[in-house]
Amino acid sequence: MSEPILQGVYGPYTIDARDRREVLGYRLALLLAAIAQTALLVQWRLVGPQGLWPWLALLALALGLALRWIHIYLRPLHRALQLLWLLGCLGAAVMAWRVGPDQMVVALGDQRLWLLAIGPLFAALAGIGFKEFFCFRRVEAIGVTLLLPLALLGYLVGVLDAGTSSGLMAIQSALLLLLCGRKFPMPAAADVGDKSVFAHLATLDQGQQPREQRS
Image 1 (tube, rainbow, N blue to C red):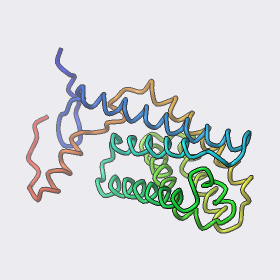
Image 2: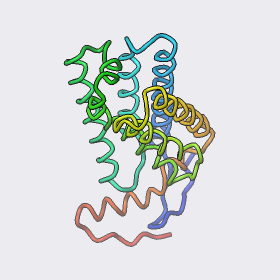
Image 3: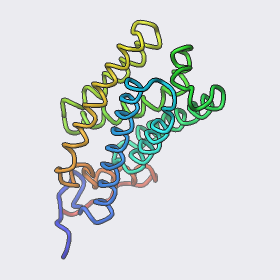
C-alpha cells in the first residue's frame, strides 16, 4: 500500500515507516523523561535527597533520545539543544565524581552554584517545551517552558528556597506528563512537520539552488 502524498510548502512529501518510528521513539523518550523527573521529585519529597542519581541518569538518557528523534526545522536550534544536553551530562558527571552520585541533590542544597553544572540539561528540556508550544500551542507546554527555568534560576539566585523550587518543578513535571499523554493520539505527520521544508533547508545548506518541485 502506497503512502498518502501530502502537499508541503516546497512540494509534495510522504510520511513513511521510518518517520513513524522516529515519532514513536520521540514520544516514548519524552514520556520516559517525564516519568523519571516525576519519580525523582516524589522520592525526594518522600524519602530524602540521597540516592536520586538513577532517576537523573534515566532523565538524561531519555532526554538525549528525545533530542535524537525530535523534528526541528532549524538545524542550528536542534544542535544547540543537543549541545545543552551534552554540557548538562558532562556537568552531572563532574558533579557525581566530585561529591558522589548519592550526594548530588544534597550538594545542590549546600552549594547552589552546582546548578550551573547540570542546568544545561534542564535548559534542553525547556527548549523541547518551547518547541512543543511553538508548533502546537498547547497550554501545558507553556508551563514546561516557563516553570522549569523559573524554578531553577529562582533557586540559583536565591529568590526561591528549595521547597518552592521543587514545588514549581513538580507542577512542571505534571504538565510534561500531560503533554506527553496528549501527543500519542496525534498523527505522526504532526510531529514530523512539513518534510519539504527540511528538504529545502538541506538543499540550501549544501550551497545549491533549490530545485523546482511539482505539485
